[in-house]
Length: 100
Image (spheres, rainbow, N blue to C red):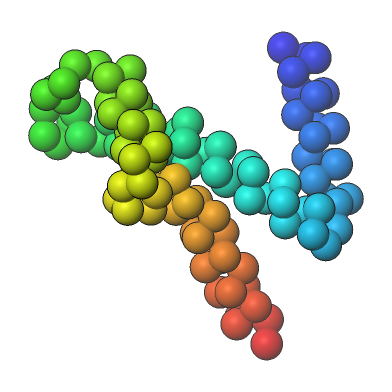
C-alpha cells in the first residue's frame, strides 16, 4: 500500500511539473482513460439503482457494448468518452472567469 501511495505521489508531482503541450497531452490522456474506464462503471451503477438490471447482462456486457459503440462511431458513446475532458475545460474556463 505504501509503494502505491508513493508512486501516485510521484505521478502527481510529475503532472504538476509538466508544462505546455506535454501537460495538455497528459490531461487529455488521463481524461480519456477516465471516460473509457470509469464512466461506464458509473453509468452502470446509476442505471442499476434507477432503472434496474441491465438488459444485456452485467457490467462487462455494458462495457463491451460501449466499446463497440466507440468503434462504430456512436455520437453518444464518444460524448461519454470525452466528457471528462470537456468538464476539465469547463472548470478551467470557470476558474479563469473567477480570477479575472
